[in-house]
Image (cartoon, rainbow, N blue to C red; front, side):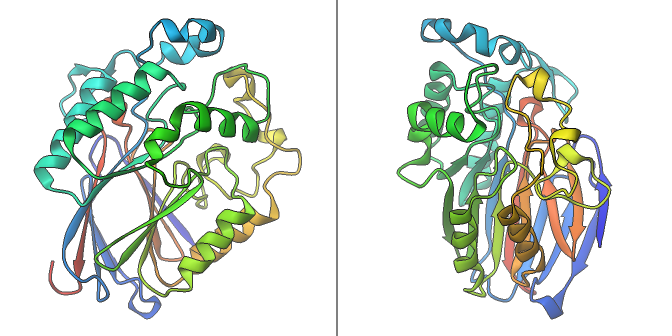
Length: 322
Protein backbone atom coordinates (compact mmCIF):
# COMPACT_ATOMS: atom_id res chain seq x y z
CA UNK A 1 0.00 0.00 0.00
CA UNK A 2 1.28 3.48 -0.82
CA UNK A 3 -0.11 6.68 0.63
CA UNK A 4 0.77 9.86 -1.24
CA UNK A 5 0.96 13.41 0.05
CA UNK A 6 2.23 16.40 -1.88
CA UNK A 7 2.94 19.91 -0.65
CA UNK A 8 4.42 23.17 -1.89
CA UNK A 9 7.36 25.07 -0.48
CA UNK A 10 8.34 23.79 2.95
CA UNK A 11 4.73 23.05 3.83
CA UNK A 12 4.75 19.38 4.75
CA UNK A 13 2.24 18.61 7.47
CA UNK A 14 3.55 17.05 10.66
CA UNK A 15 3.32 13.26 10.58
CA UNK A 16 4.58 10.40 12.71
CA UNK A 17 4.83 6.72 11.83
CA UNK A 18 6.12 3.82 13.88
CA UNK A 19 6.73 0.39 12.36
CA UNK A 20 8.37 -1.36 15.28
CA UNK A 21 7.60 -4.89 14.14
CA UNK A 22 9.58 -4.24 10.94
CA UNK A 23 12.46 -2.68 12.88
CA UNK A 24 12.20 0.56 10.92
CA UNK A 25 12.00 2.49 14.12
CA UNK A 26 9.96 5.67 13.89
CA UNK A 27 9.99 8.90 11.96
CA UNK A 28 8.38 12.29 12.26
CA UNK A 29 8.21 15.05 9.69
CA UNK A 30 7.66 18.78 10.09
CA UNK A 31 8.25 21.24 7.27
CA UNK A 32 11.44 20.26 5.48
CA UNK A 33 12.86 18.38 8.47
CA UNK A 34 12.54 14.63 8.98
CA UNK A 35 13.58 12.94 12.20
CA UNK A 36 14.36 9.22 12.40
CA UNK A 37 14.55 7.23 15.64
CA UNK A 38 16.05 3.76 15.83
CA UNK A 39 17.57 1.68 18.60
CA UNK A 40 20.68 0.91 16.50
CA UNK A 41 21.59 4.58 16.00
CA UNK A 42 24.55 5.15 18.31
CA UNK A 43 24.33 8.93 18.71
CA UNK A 44 22.36 11.88 17.30
CA UNK A 45 23.53 13.42 14.02
CA UNK A 46 22.25 15.47 11.09
CA UNK A 47 22.44 15.12 7.32
CA UNK A 48 21.36 17.60 4.66
CA UNK A 49 19.94 16.36 1.34
CA UNK A 50 19.57 18.57 -1.70
CA UNK A 51 18.93 18.06 -5.41
CA UNK A 52 18.00 19.88 -8.60
CA UNK A 53 20.14 23.00 -8.23
CA UNK A 54 20.51 23.18 -12.03
CA UNK A 55 23.68 25.24 -12.12
CA UNK A 56 24.16 26.58 -15.65
CA UNK A 57 27.40 28.59 -15.50
CA UNK A 58 29.42 28.14 -18.71
CA UNK A 59 32.41 29.63 -20.52
CA UNK A 60 34.29 29.38 -23.80
CA UNK A 61 34.88 25.67 -23.23
CA UNK A 62 31.16 25.15 -23.65
CA UNK A 63 30.94 26.83 -27.04
CA UNK A 64 31.30 23.57 -29.05
CA UNK A 65 28.32 22.15 -27.11
CA UNK A 66 25.85 25.04 -27.48
CA UNK A 67 23.66 23.00 -29.81
CA UNK A 68 23.18 20.49 -26.98
CA UNK A 69 23.02 22.78 -23.93
CA UNK A 70 20.88 25.67 -25.22
CA UNK A 71 17.48 24.75 -23.74
CA UNK A 72 18.72 23.84 -20.27
CA UNK A 73 21.13 26.80 -20.18
CA UNK A 74 18.07 29.06 -20.06
CA UNK A 75 15.77 26.90 -17.95
CA UNK A 76 16.61 28.11 -14.42
CA UNK A 77 18.43 31.41 -14.80
CA UNK A 78 15.99 33.08 -12.42
CA UNK A 79 13.86 31.35 -9.81
CA UNK A 80 11.56 32.26 -6.93
CA UNK A 81 12.65 31.15 -3.47
CA UNK A 82 10.28 28.58 -1.93
CA UNK A 83 10.59 30.08 1.56
CA UNK A 84 10.81 33.85 0.99
CA UNK A 85 9.09 34.18 -2.36
CA UNK A 86 11.89 36.49 -3.50
CA UNK A 87 13.54 36.31 -6.92
CA UNK A 88 16.78 34.32 -6.69
CA UNK A 89 19.01 32.03 -8.78
CA UNK A 90 20.61 28.58 -8.49
CA UNK A 91 24.10 29.75 -7.46
CA UNK A 92 22.71 31.90 -4.65
CA UNK A 93 20.54 29.02 -3.44
CA UNK A 94 23.46 26.56 -3.54
CA UNK A 95 25.62 28.87 -1.42
CA UNK A 96 22.75 29.49 0.99
CA UNK A 97 22.24 25.75 1.42
CA UNK A 98 25.93 25.12 2.13
CA UNK A 99 25.89 27.92 4.70
CA UNK A 100 22.91 26.35 6.47
CA UNK A 101 24.64 22.96 6.41
CA UNK A 102 27.70 24.48 8.11
CA UNK A 103 25.51 26.16 10.70
CA UNK A 104 23.68 22.89 11.37
CA UNK A 105 27.02 21.03 11.65
CA UNK A 106 25.78 18.18 9.49
CA UNK A 107 27.69 14.92 9.20
CA UNK A 108 27.58 15.29 5.43
CA UNK A 109 25.64 16.87 2.57
CA UNK A 110 24.00 14.55 0.04
CA UNK A 111 23.94 16.08 -3.46
CA UNK A 112 21.30 13.94 -5.12
CA UNK A 113 21.52 14.78 -8.79
CA UNK A 114 20.72 17.50 -11.29
CA UNK A 115 23.11 19.78 -9.47
CA UNK A 116 23.96 20.81 -13.05
CA UNK A 117 21.66 21.46 -16.00
CA UNK A 118 24.24 19.92 -18.34
CA UNK A 119 27.87 18.80 -17.88
CA UNK A 120 29.42 22.28 -18.01
CA UNK A 121 33.07 22.36 -16.99
CA UNK A 122 32.68 25.87 -15.59
CA UNK A 123 29.69 24.93 -13.43
CA UNK A 124 31.34 21.75 -12.15
CA UNK A 125 34.53 23.60 -11.22
CA UNK A 126 32.54 26.35 -9.50
CA UNK A 127 30.52 23.87 -7.43
CA UNK A 128 33.61 21.89 -6.48
CA UNK A 129 35.33 25.10 -5.35
CA UNK A 130 32.36 26.06 -3.16
CA UNK A 131 32.25 22.61 -1.61
CA UNK A 132 35.97 22.71 -0.88
CA UNK A 133 35.71 26.17 0.67
CA UNK A 134 32.79 25.07 2.84
CA UNK A 135 34.89 22.21 4.29
CA UNK A 136 31.73 20.13 4.39
CA UNK A 137 31.82 16.39 3.90
CA UNK A 138 29.61 15.43 0.97
CA UNK A 139 28.48 12.65 -1.35
CA UNK A 140 27.36 13.24 -4.93
CA UNK A 141 25.34 11.16 -7.37
CA UNK A 142 24.30 12.18 -10.88
CA UNK A 143 20.81 13.03 -12.04
CA UNK A 144 19.41 12.78 -15.53
CA UNK A 145 20.56 16.29 -16.50
CA UNK A 146 24.05 16.29 -14.97
CA UNK A 147 25.49 14.17 -17.78
CA UNK A 148 22.98 14.91 -20.55
CA UNK A 149 23.72 17.09 -23.57
CA UNK A 150 20.34 17.19 -25.30
CA UNK A 151 20.37 15.80 -28.82
CA UNK A 152 23.80 14.22 -28.57
CA UNK A 153 23.93 10.84 -30.26
CA UNK A 154 24.23 7.78 -28.05
CA UNK A 155 22.33 5.60 -25.62
CA UNK A 156 21.50 6.89 -22.18
CA UNK A 157 23.90 4.38 -20.66
CA UNK A 158 26.81 5.32 -22.95
CA UNK A 159 26.25 9.07 -22.54
CA UNK A 160 26.10 8.74 -18.77
CA UNK A 161 29.34 6.78 -18.74
CA UNK A 162 31.06 9.25 -21.09
CA UNK A 163 30.21 12.49 -19.30
CA UNK A 164 30.52 11.11 -15.78
CA UNK A 165 34.04 9.97 -16.64
CA UNK A 166 34.97 13.08 -18.65
CA UNK A 167 33.45 15.81 -16.46
CA UNK A 168 31.80 14.70 -13.23
CA UNK A 169 34.23 12.12 -11.87
CA UNK A 170 36.05 14.59 -9.61
CA UNK A 171 32.88 15.04 -7.52
CA UNK A 172 32.85 11.37 -6.52
CA UNK A 173 36.10 11.83 -4.56
CA UNK A 174 37.42 8.44 -5.60
CA UNK A 175 34.13 6.61 -5.04
CA UNK A 176 32.22 4.50 -7.53
CA UNK A 177 29.82 6.78 -9.47
CA UNK A 178 27.19 4.04 -9.69
CA UNK A 179 27.07 3.07 -6.02
CA UNK A 180 28.53 4.16 -2.72
CA UNK A 181 27.85 3.61 0.95
CA UNK A 182 28.64 5.86 3.88
CA UNK A 183 28.14 4.92 7.53
CA UNK A 184 27.40 7.42 10.28
CA UNK A 185 26.73 6.30 13.87
CA UNK A 186 25.33 2.94 12.81
CA UNK A 187 23.25 4.11 9.82
CA UNK A 188 24.21 2.94 6.32
CA UNK A 189 23.59 5.55 3.62
CA UNK A 190 23.39 3.79 0.26
CA UNK A 191 23.81 6.19 -2.67
CA UNK A 192 22.87 4.83 -6.11
CA UNK A 193 22.75 6.30 -9.62
CA UNK A 194 19.34 5.57 -11.16
CA UNK A 195 19.46 8.64 -13.39
CA UNK A 196 17.85 6.97 -16.39
CA UNK A 197 15.31 5.12 -14.21
CA UNK A 198 17.02 1.72 -14.32
CA UNK A 199 18.97 -0.30 -11.75
CA UNK A 200 21.94 -2.34 -12.98
CA UNK A 201 22.70 -5.91 -11.79
CA UNK A 202 25.85 -4.77 -9.97
CA UNK A 203 23.81 -2.14 -8.12
CA UNK A 204 21.26 -4.74 -7.05
CA UNK A 205 24.05 -7.05 -5.81
CA UNK A 206 25.67 -4.15 -3.94
CA UNK A 207 22.38 -3.21 -2.27
CA UNK A 208 21.62 -6.82 -1.34
CA UNK A 209 24.92 -7.14 0.51
CA UNK A 210 24.14 -4.07 2.59
CA UNK A 211 20.54 -5.12 3.23
CA UNK A 212 21.81 -8.39 4.70
CA UNK A 213 23.72 -6.46 7.37
CA UNK A 214 20.38 -5.86 9.18
CA UNK A 215 21.63 -2.41 10.17
CA UNK A 216 19.40 0.65 9.52
CA UNK A 217 19.70 1.88 5.93
CA UNK A 218 18.76 5.10 4.14
CA UNK A 219 18.63 4.81 0.37
CA UNK A 220 19.53 7.95 -1.62
CA UNK A 221 18.93 8.31 -5.38
CA UNK A 222 18.02 11.05 -7.82
CA UNK A 223 14.77 9.51 -9.06
CA UNK A 224 12.32 8.45 -6.32
CA UNK A 225 10.76 5.01 -6.15
CA UNK A 226 7.38 4.49 -7.76
CA UNK A 227 4.47 4.97 -5.39
CA UNK A 228 0.86 4.04 -6.11
CA UNK A 229 -1.05 6.93 -7.65
CA UNK A 230 2.02 8.76 -8.92
CA UNK A 231 2.53 9.52 -12.61
CA UNK A 232 4.72 7.29 -14.78
CA UNK A 233 7.57 9.81 -14.93
CA UNK A 234 7.60 10.27 -11.16
CA UNK A 235 9.40 7.17 -10.03
CA UNK A 236 11.71 4.26 -10.66
CA UNK A 237 9.88 0.92 -10.80
CA UNK A 238 6.55 2.12 -12.23
CA UNK A 239 4.83 -0.78 -14.06
CA UNK A 240 3.79 1.58 -16.87
CA UNK A 241 7.28 2.95 -17.56
CA UNK A 242 7.79 2.20 -21.26
CA UNK A 243 8.11 3.78 -24.71
CA UNK A 244 4.37 4.21 -25.10
CA UNK A 245 4.22 6.42 -22.00
CA UNK A 246 7.41 8.42 -22.63
CA UNK A 247 6.11 11.96 -23.18
CA UNK A 248 9.37 13.89 -22.87
CA UNK A 249 11.96 12.19 -25.06
CA UNK A 250 11.43 14.57 -27.99
CA UNK A 251 11.62 17.68 -25.78
CA UNK A 252 14.73 16.38 -24.03
CA UNK A 253 16.15 15.02 -27.32
CA UNK A 254 17.17 11.71 -25.83
CA UNK A 255 16.75 8.01 -26.38
CA UNK A 256 13.18 6.84 -25.79
CA UNK A 257 12.37 4.56 -22.88
CA UNK A 258 12.40 0.85 -23.82
CA UNK A 259 9.35 -0.70 -25.49
CA UNK A 260 9.13 -3.42 -22.83
CA UNK A 261 9.66 -1.08 -19.90
CA UNK A 262 11.83 -1.74 -16.89
CA UNK A 263 14.36 -4.52 -16.69
CA UNK A 264 13.68 -7.48 -14.41
CA UNK A 265 16.59 -6.25 -12.29
CA UNK A 266 14.90 -2.89 -11.65
CA UNK A 267 11.66 -4.56 -10.60
CA UNK A 268 13.55 -6.96 -8.33
CA UNK A 269 15.42 -4.05 -6.73
CA UNK A 270 12.12 -2.28 -6.11
CA UNK A 271 10.59 -5.35 -4.47
CA UNK A 272 13.56 -6.07 -2.24
CA UNK A 273 14.06 -2.48 -1.07
CA UNK A 274 10.39 -1.79 -0.34
CA UNK A 275 10.05 -5.06 1.59
CA UNK A 276 13.31 -4.80 3.53
CA UNK A 277 12.60 -4.29 7.25
CA UNK A 278 15.75 -2.24 7.88
CA UNK A 279 15.31 0.49 5.24
CA UNK A 280 14.39 3.60 7.23
CA UNK A 281 13.58 5.74 4.17
CA UNK A 282 14.44 6.66 0.61
CA UNK A 283 15.48 10.24 -0.12
CA UNK A 284 15.36 11.65 -3.67
CA UNK A 285 14.93 14.66 -5.93
CA UNK A 286 13.94 14.93 -9.60
CA UNK A 287 10.32 16.04 -9.13
CA UNK A 288 11.06 19.67 -8.11
CA UNK A 289 8.46 19.63 -5.36
CA UNK A 290 8.39 18.12 -1.86
CA UNK A 291 6.46 14.87 -1.59
CA UNK A 292 6.04 12.11 0.96
CA UNK A 293 4.78 8.61 0.21
CA UNK A 294 4.59 5.53 2.40
CA UNK A 295 5.47 2.30 0.58
CA UNK A 296 4.85 -0.72 2.82
CA UNK A 297 5.25 1.68 5.72
CA UNK A 298 8.60 2.98 4.44
CA UNK A 299 8.76 6.76 3.91
CA UNK A 300 9.82 7.79 0.41
CA UNK A 301 10.66 11.49 0.52
CA UNK A 302 11.45 13.99 -2.25
CA UNK A 303 13.10 17.34 -1.61
CA UNK A 304 12.02 20.59 -3.21
CA UNK A 305 14.35 21.87 -5.93
CA UNK A 306 17.51 23.54 -4.67
CA UNK A 307 17.31 25.89 -7.70
CA UNK A 308 14.62 27.66 -5.67
CA UNK A 309 16.14 27.16 -2.23
CA UNK A 310 14.83 23.70 -1.37
CA UNK A 311 16.61 21.10 0.77
CA UNK A 312 15.85 18.51 3.44
CA UNK A 313 17.22 18.41 6.98
CA UNK A 314 17.49 14.84 8.22
CA UNK A 315 17.97 14.24 11.94
CA UNK A 316 18.83 10.79 13.31
CA UNK A 317 18.66 9.83 16.97
CA UNK A 318 18.62 6.73 19.18
CA UNK A 319 15.10 5.67 20.10
CA UNK A 320 13.76 7.72 22.98
CA UNK A 321 16.66 10.21 22.87
CA UNK A 322 15.55 12.78 20.28
